[in-house]
Length: 194
Image (cartoon, rainbow, N blue to C red; front, side, top):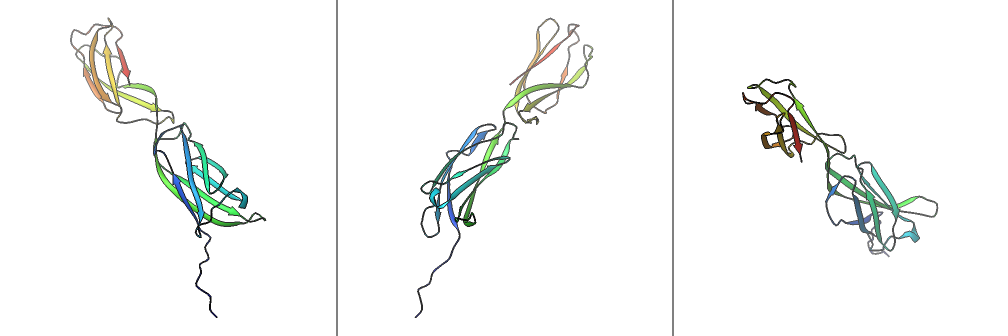
């Protein structure tokens, strides 16, 4: 007699439920989902079901309860902005600690950085009336990286506190400012606002 056909599988099907895909560096990502064996049975802590999640250098692990998992993974504040995969691995073990079944899923998250400081780069610090000066605004994030193409307000005051130039600029952009022939002598000031 021949039995009916059957399949042997060690696969766990992992469904990931993310409430959003965009996060700021340092924010907490709520990692929720379900884990079921390919035969439909749920994984849980009674049969040694575990879950691990990683996002860049941030990692967390936990147990699976009634086929579901719910973890809170905090991203690093110094994480550079960009696209990162979040990888969720699920497995169960036998009574001797051997891994029996496994499953994995992933999703791409966008991590944005927060500006923390502004800096002004000048080509010279001594200028005569009628001369030009090159000004470049630079913005840094919490990771210490420069943030290009961010809009800032650039204000130039003369030594008497009068605004001689005010304009929108992008970080990393070089601006050439020509001083008037009647520019007041003394220390002028460049202000960046974001």
